[in-house]
Structures are given as C-alpha cells and as structure tokens.
Length: 453
Image 1 (cartoon, helix red, strand yellow):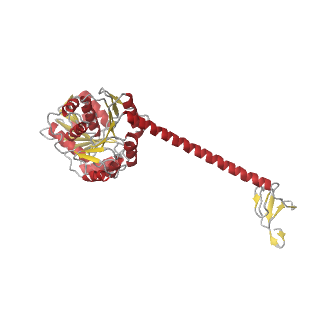
Image 2 (image 1 turned 45 degrees about the vertical axis):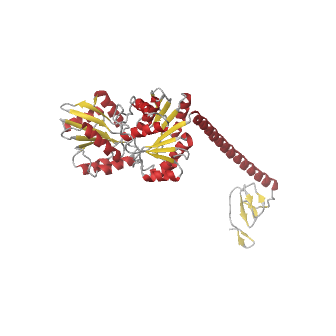
C-alpha cells in the first residue's frame, strides 16, 4: 500500500465528478484516488484541482429554479382544484334555489316506500313533485308519476344527488323528495348537508344494519341533519337520537303511534302504517289537506321491494311466494314474517325460508348466520341461495340439523322444483336477506308466473 508522509493512503477509486469538501473544488477528469486532501492520479502524478466557483454557483441557481417551478406547478394545481370546487358549489346553490322545498328521508328501513308515499300525497294536492329512491331499485320519479331507472356506470355515489336537483329544476318541480343513499357517516353528512340541504328531514327508524360502515348510526344521523331543517320522526326513532337533535337546536316533530290508524286512508298494496303515517305527517306539515294527500296515495305505484305475495301452482300443491327481501336486518324481517304468516299462512303452518346472500355484504351474511344459528325462526326448511361460502354452509348445517337445503342451480324454476319435492302439499315460501342478484330474479319470476295473492 502506498504511503504519504508516513501515513497510509485511503483508496477511493472512480471517476471524480463531485464537489470535494476538503479542497473546496470540483474535480473532473481521469480515474483517481483521494488521500489526505489531495487528488492523486492512478499513474502516480499529483494534481491539485482549483476551485470552480462559477460551476458551484450555477448548480445552486439551477436547483433554486427547479424548486420554483415545482412550487408553481403545485400552486397551479391547487388553484385549479379550488376553482372547480367553488364552481361546483355555485352550481349546487343555484339548483337548490330553483327547488326551495327539499325533503330528505333517512333511516334503516322503509325509506323508499316513504319517499313514494310523500310524493304521491303531494301530487294529490296538485304539486309538481320529483322523487328519487335508491333502495331496492334506483329510480327517478317525475311530476306525472312516471319512473325512470337510474343507470350507473360505476359504483353508486352521493354525487348523483346533483342530478336529482338538476332534473327538478328542469321539470319546474315544486318539491324534491330524495332518499339518502350514503352508509358512511362522513359521506352522509356531505350528501345531506353539503349537496341537498333539505328543509325537512324524515327519519323512519333506526336498526342494526351496515354495521361495518356505520358503527354509530345515532351520531351519524344526528350530525347529518342541517341546523335550519325540521326533523319529522316516527315512533321507532330512539330517544337518544331525538335528544342529540335537540341539543343541536334542531326542531323535531315526534309522530304519535295512532297517527296512521285512519282506515279511510289506504294504498293498493301491503304497506306499514308507520310509513303511511309519516308520509301524511309530512304532507300536513307542508299544508296539504289530508283528503288530498289520501287521494294521491291511493294511486301510488309500489316499490319493487314492498311486501308482496304470489300464488304459485306446484306439481301437487299450492305455494305462496312472499317477497320480504327488502327487509335486510333480522328485526325488520321478523315483523315482515309475522305479517306474512298472518296473511298467507296455511293451516298446517308449513313455511320454508329462502335466504339470499350477497357477496359484497359480508357483515350482513355474518349477522344472518349468527341469528339463524340460534334456532328461534319458525322455518321447517331453510334454502340458501346467492353467495354461500363453505364456512356459511358448515355453520348452518350444524345449527339446523338436516333442515338446510342448498339448491344445485340458483335459477327460479329449479329452486321452486326442489322445494316442491321437499313438501309436495305446498306451503309458504318466504324470501328474505337481500333483494339484489338472485332475489330480484325470483321476484320477477314470481310476478310473471304467479297470481297476486
């Protein structure tokens, strides 16, 4: 190893194209090694590199120029985004001014039915009402009562509520009745308070559903209501939610249990009295005479998820196919099942449950498996269709002890044939869980092949 002044040289090889801090110079040139503040060429010739202050200054200036360009680019992007957001808010405010009376319906169950009932009652008084439902089937209703399905290219988004305001202005609507669609607290707050900003908020009920996305529905609903709105609440709304609304200074109107018991007000399908009462209360709050509102709801078109039944002729007996698919949570389903058995139940009491599971509702699947494993449901057989993982089948087989039936093919015809073989005399076939997918195909098949019961 070469020595310099009695000390060993530290070898460093490579092409020198960097600033040397010990010498204060920039070295360019041949292969070299550094030792004790001096540059020594590989050939052994010593060479001192003089400081190039001009090169150093130009490098710093270049770095500053790049930083300025980056800052300008970032500032331009932020300014463009803020400008677009400001323009969007301006457009939304203009749309809201064109439709001064806006009603939003919140809740776990019954939102779509209440939206239709309110719009029908307003039409009965001669008002031009536009409405939108997003539950069982997303549709946009026009002032003449016609409905048009909403086709989505991507996943559902609260931003589509802007379209409802746009259509309301285009159709010169007096009132817009909109079903809230968000299942996350922050999205619900932005949808109701930021986009729609309703004058009236209707709250149907509050039950356990969408647990993964909405762990605290009381807080989410309370924060979603605007401060200048009036909250019309049914008897199913918990007291905690009412107290939170009042703490925020929001005017609340609690509907008594007997408000919808008038037998003179009826609808042409199976409807819950609480939903009808809420709709009539909203119409009365807007100054609509009860007679006019009742006349309007008599001509209502039912929601596709409304409780319905059909008489199906089997190979040896008669089956009553009941659609309770829209009641997704166990609490609501128990109420629907009790009503269905009272209306269409057979003397022998034979009932088959048809559970439809969705792949994108894992929390709901787990909720239903836990509930059915308790063994308190009055099903003589339980058929499971849709997304049925092995773990779900194993738990249900263990809990139901031979009463579980999983059709080989999830077509409506095949399902009905297998159920008819399990009990030839017939009975009640009660569909529940989810309406999407197989549930919708079953409802369409029953309505096409069966007779309304």
